[in-house]
Image 1 (cartoon, rainbow, N blue to C red):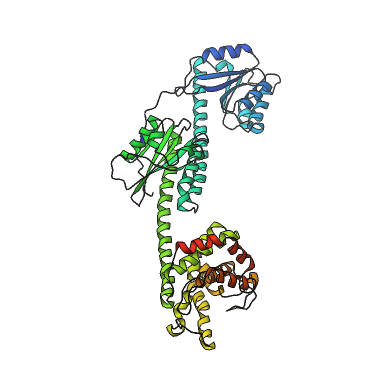
Image 2 (image 1 turned 45 degrees about the vertical axis):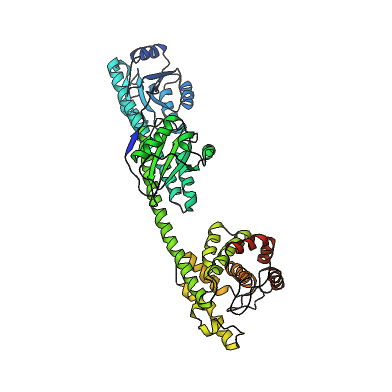
Amino acid sequence: MGVLDDRLEFAAEPSRTLPPWKVLIVDDEPEVHNVTRLVLGNFRFAERPLELLSAYSSREAEKLLRGHDDIAVVLLDVVMDSEQAGLDLVRAIRERLRNQFVRIVLRTGQPGQAPEHEVIASYDINDYKEKTELTAQKLATTLYAALRAYRDMRTIEASRRGLEQVIRASGEVFARHPPQQFASIVLAQLVSLVGAESGALCCRISQPDGALPDHFPVVATSDSYRRYLGQNAGEQLPADMAQSLRDAYLHRHHVFGDDHYVLYFIDNNASEALLYIGESKERDELGDQLMQVFCNNVAIAFENLHLNQELFDSQLDMVYLLAGAAESRSQETANHVRRVGELAAMLGRLHGLDAETCELLSYAAPLHDIGKIGIPDAILNKPGVHTPEETEVMRTHAELGARLLGGSRRPVFRLAADIAISHHENWDGSGYPRGLRGTEIPVGGRITALADVFDALGSKRCYKEAWPEDEIRAFIVDKRGSKFDPEMTDLLFANWDQVVALRRALPD
């Protein structure tokens, strides 16, 4: 899903009552409170009224400020319970409460007690007014300026926090994840961005023809929407939200509703996706802009995912082509190397290797005998026993394979090089080419050695018939601790039915 249409559509919004601006009046004279409330009774800024709070001492004011972190403006008297009470409160607000957003307007009836130039220079206040000059008009003008500054600072801070969230969320999306997990990762980050109470789901429409589909099948969900997985979102969601899905699909763009989002993506594999986020908090312009930034990042990540997958698929094709070249020369079946890869990955998981290493094993183990491509046909396909000289030539395939693969920086080929040179080493040190013993042998080599021998014994070769299961078991038991890693051998026997089923799933 790599191409993002950045056109937006907004669903019809209901009218919403905006919360009031909180203004704290701090003064020890009740009459000041009464007059201020009278003057500001009908004040509006940005279509929002005021909520006036009153405190009659610095201690009471600090308590209110602790309980209301969204107070926008403090109208503060200097002289109250002490001559410096107001100024001490300023320091408490900025230093003890660490509130840098609230706008502080100092109002004093005794300017000589707190000279303007000294106060402004020494204290983090935003305005200084003498009570005698604060007419109704000047008080309104002062409040307009203070609220505008508070609003802008909050907007900048919200943008900063929002962008940090988007960057963190985008970083998680861009991190290397298996393709099948990608939609779930995106949904989780979307829920994180819009609020924990939200639910999210992903619908995929395969082979779209431009017409409205009958179904919007849900292929991934957040935990809270798990009940929708595998169902038709068009039938399960409320009518207005289902309509947003249809609108997003028909017009190939995002739809932002008042309490939900539908994000539209199209990929390179003839399918389209809709990411739905419902029951989200009330959206605003900033939230929409941040969501758009995240959507753009997701689109880029989708594109990168497809490019990486195409590159990986090309590498995988090369792996099997190379392995197939070696097989065809030694007249082994095409499925032998595939079975060895699958069995190696299985043993890796049982051994406790991480998922990424096990996946690499499934692709690297098939190349264990790639060095046979350099062995003469007369030796490689000889039906009888090799002479000592022929055995020496035959054994060179391990080092030859490692040289062929070792020049690559790709993890899969580097692991394949380790396996190529070590899969004929024996647990007791009697193997070749380096005579390694025990855990000196790379774990990939130990795993592949067991997987290769198990599968080869059960396959027909130019020099032998396929062995029955009981003889294979007996041979591996006999070689436990000498040729094979004892722990790997025990894991093989503990999961014998699963191992045999894998072989039957990919017959010669």
